[in-house]
Length: 116
Image 1 (cartoon, rainbow, N blue to C red):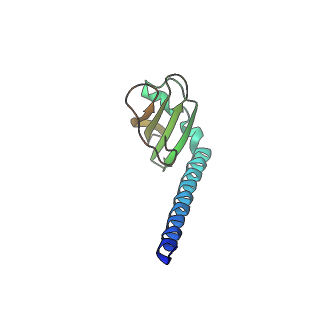
Image 2 (image 1 turned 90 degrees about the horizontal axis):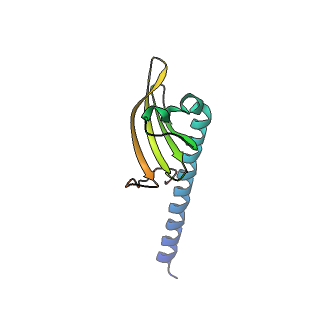
Image 3 (image 1 turned 60 degrees about the horizontal axis):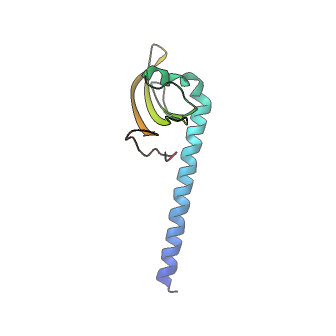
């Protein structure tokens, strides 16, 4: 093998290492935010009026005024929804939501860092 091939291998290896580090750091951030703030919005999905249950959730982003939460149901009608909240009068109020994936229908999206 030549020096060029060795350089390509080293660069490829570092790209993979950096990607895996960023992915792990993103998951750690979501897990930490869920641990710290999850109790505030664990049942927030009920505000949609369309989502009846949730098997688990992760807080994707959090600030004093906004929160972005990923709710997942694994049942027969499985879904994954990203729900956005705004804090008004010390209450988390739904501001928007998007279905990322579903067992039925056409939603088939991508969600960083959970991939789906």
